[in-house]
Image 1: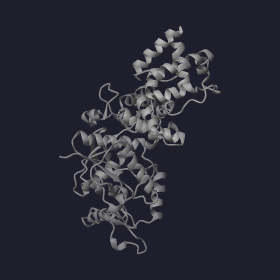
Image 2 (image 1 turned 90 degrees about the horizontal axis):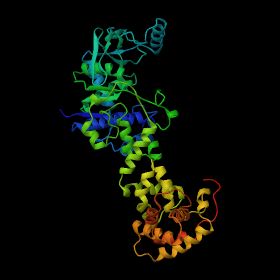
Image 3 (image 1 turned 90 degrees about the vertical axis):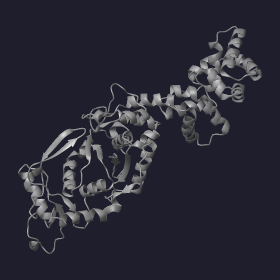
Length: 471
């Protein structure tokens, strides 16, 4: 059997981080078993489904690197097929036309509430004579649910779950306007797409019992169900906007790498021993449903920062440069020239060691594209008149040096400090202040090597003289 999983979001907003975790688990399970991962957009709610929301889902999955197999299925385009299945059940005597009016249904609900029962349809048209149908009511089509016994699902995460069939009312398959309901559409689409495993949030567990019975009524093999726990915020409540970013796009904007987000999502409800950092390729090899727990997982934003810092240190410098340059250009309101891009690229090995997000990285990379206009108060203390005089003499030596490398620059500055009769810090710290305007940066010789001779000499020729108000 070829494993086929699916991710089936409703496009009524952004791709929620919980949906992204569901998509990841489906993707990993399919890739682990050499199967297929399918995408279905459940856009039957025409009023709430928007092209912008659909695009946000596609963009979010693409950014996360969760590629899907085959064409994207749009549920709204399959309404005729869904309706035909409802009529098929009707012809087989497994469904019936229901003429209950809105007023009758409201009365059933009120009576159920008064008696402390969950509201459910009472089946009054299940075996009624069609000739008694009122002429002014357009019927719906309802499925005949079993009246006795239990519906049992062997869930791969929750274990054996059961519900008494008397709790499953005869749900609507086809509305009076001829449109199919969600419960019918999902079953037909899962069957037609060859879905073998339905992996989704445990808030869908109650749906599974009803969908299972639709599969059985159609003599179709139900898929294997696996209902994964929801994601909670750090305070133990359901993850929401008040906890911070809940949409995938926000994590991109905040400067997280997709592999870090995949890793944190993987660890939300799944585990392999004590492993925290699990690269994607290894996750594909390790992932199975046996490792998914039943308890809700808590999203740890501090852990995400740590994960992201790890993956940034591991990331290719050219890739990081490509991600940071647009952020710098957006900050500066202009395009970087080739020399500036080259400096950022050359400085990336040191920059990425000290950043946890791309936002941090872009902020730190400004030293390579923006000449300091003022000094931080701490930097100003290092750049007094004596220090400026030493730097002026050093500038002449830097202009004449043959090899412009980190090692050669360090040797030169050490020799210059010795010749000046001062410790290395008395020359290196003023040098850092003049070049960056700050006392904080990657190693100063690394910075000089990345900046290049021309830029270093230009900055030393006109070092900042004013002190910033803060910093």
